[in-house]
Length: 156
Ligand SMILES: CC(C)(COP(=O)(O)OP(=O)(O)OC[C@H]1O[C@@H](n2cnc3c(N)ncnc32)[C@H](O)[C@@H]1OP(=O)(O)O)[C@@H](O)C(=O)NCCC(=O)NCCS
Image (cartoon, rainbow, N blue to C red; front, side, top):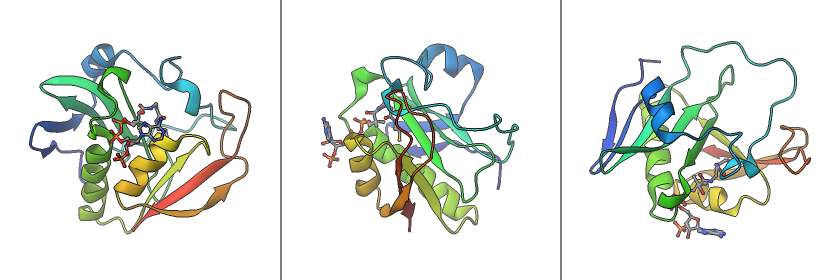
């Protein structure tokens, strides 16, 4: 895996995630605004994974979200979130397409994405980026609502 380069698609830029981006985006999977469909994974926290890229989603010059590959998961499993004020503009789909293509160009043969079964927005993003349903995981993580089941999607 080459180190995460800057990926771009016109006015959308994905750049390697930095502490400065974390301060500017000011959300994490635990934030109430976006955290409904995230939850702590089971078991011990994963060890750091320098091979798993993470990017800031930068639109109109401003960092507005994050897209990353989960530590210690292979094939790579992508997660993402955006600040709510930019939802609905296609930024998540375009970001997922950029990361998907970056991973494949880096030699990966498939990319995975998992969502809470009720996270229809994210499932639309996955479908529009060409991911196909690939079953479900009964005990994926403890989501905010106490459930543990996730739908799994893969590309190609
Ligand atoms: C998931 C998330 C990144 C999507 O961001 P976004 O910028 O709105 O995504 P896009 O604009 O690229 O696409 C959203 C799609 O959902 C659809 N959509 C919008 N509102 C919806 C709703 N209430 N229910 C179902 N689908 C909806 C849109 O029409 C669009 O589909 P389309 O391209 O077929 O028209 C954003 O909502 C978010 O950060 N959510 C919280 C964190 C999260 O759930 N992350 C994913 C964990 S797996």
